Image (tube, helix red, strand yellow):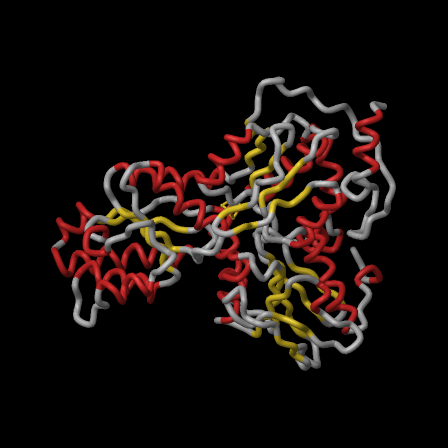
Length: 445
Ligand code: SF4
């Protein structure tokens, strides 16, 4: 075996190990085949390296869960002792995350003798990011409004995450001349395309999203592709109505200065609400609550039509027709589950994961719901659960002691698009342990 490749594998014991648990087994497996040589001159890749067959078994080993597969194979419902478990029909990794993880693993294999960097996080899941770090991939940390690429050289490889990066960061990376592996999700690219069309045609992009989220920042930056491109980011319906009031001059509207203060840091440079809210187009961060994004677009149209007439609204307000289908499916699956709300609902996923936060937020409307980052939030010794009870990603965790019904109960479970199945399975196993139930001892007939 090529010594440099062997060295890379030794330096990456977890990623390419035979470990069946998330803890590193430290053993190496022989990956079938060898890295495919890429064109020597090619420095931009967004279709992988044809190594899917080699990395698939590794990824499967890392993130598979037997108990989750068992429930899924039984029609998304199963019984463990006195606990009936219902799994949402769409949960966990989405196609964009699957692809990003696949490409990251392929990249490590393709470039065993190069330094590989990742811009921030590949997805919002600490365990997946941790596995990539263990493989020797280095993280480029945020710095100021962008990322610090000071350490990156033309000899290095840089992975762009599923949320994408801002235009400014992309230009800086291209200027360095390093190899770029772009895992930006196709659904995010569709939103960018729409924002481009707004900026090109003189419409200000009103982006429903959280401005500090990587994807929203990258989407907002797309307006700069066209001279005079403008954007403003709104967090929710209440903020959209503030924009709508200013746009239509409704009673109680903020003054120009108040408006600019309210949206400071969330508008394009030189934003002038008097000029820049005359023609607007709505776009969204793909992981927001889809129904809220659509409601915001409809409300702005309604406000404009009430103030200036339907014809004016039709001419001066554009909307979107692209909602990430994976986000939508996960939200719809939760709503289906809630047609008969379970007694207790668990939502597993990173606290900074937008789509996980929205799933938990939906569930809270129907039943006792607990958003947990991972299984460590369930304490089998005390029986307590540590969870984040609010939508805000920065809301503090709380501990709840009496959270499980004394008698038989129905448990619902789902997970955000960045949560691997093994993390769902581990959480479920811990809950069952509190009840003294050993899932392995349960009948599988
Ligand atoms: S949630 Fe949607 S947009 Fe985001 S990575 Fe997944 S598929 Fe792509």
